Structure formats: C-alpha cells, structure tokens
Length: 102
Image 1: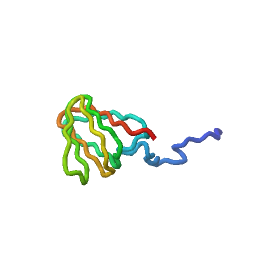
Image 2: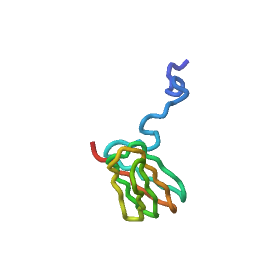
Image 3: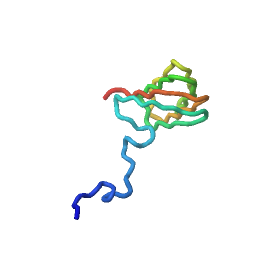
Image 4: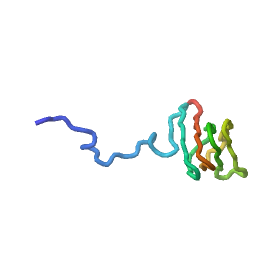
C-alpha cells in the first residue's frame, strides 16, 4: 500500500489563492488581457497600475473619478486613485496591465 498522498485528497475544494483572483497580480509584474468586444474587466485596487492599450480600443472608468478615459492602440493610462477600475473593450482589445514595483 502506498503512503503517498496528494494535495487534492487533503483539500478537495481548493481555494482561490490571492494571485488567482480577478484583478490581482504580483507587484512589479505585467499581466496581458485579451478582451473580446463589450467584455468588461475589473481591477479592485488599481492605484499605481498602468493600463497600456496594445491593440484595439477600450473605455476606462474609475469609481469616484469625474471623467472617463478612452484608450486607443499605443496609449496608456496610469491610475492614481485606489477605487475600483472598470475596463470595457469597445472592440477586441489587447491590454497590458503593469503594476508599480514594490
């Protein structure tokens, strides 16, 4: 009989680790998003994040911010507020989300 056991046997209902939740990536890292037309992506606490539009166009809005941002390919936006940020693809879009280091 084998005495080996697996993680899944001990924890059959694996929790979502912090780095697997929506809008959470490691500090200093880069996350690339491919969104189809009308898709929405939420970032919970985006202060310091830079959103770069690689291809397509996107609409960016942030809770408590008086203006919305339109991003086209080659443009970027750096978030200065901690409130939730929503990004909606106006067409198929590729975005790069860059976190500040440290």
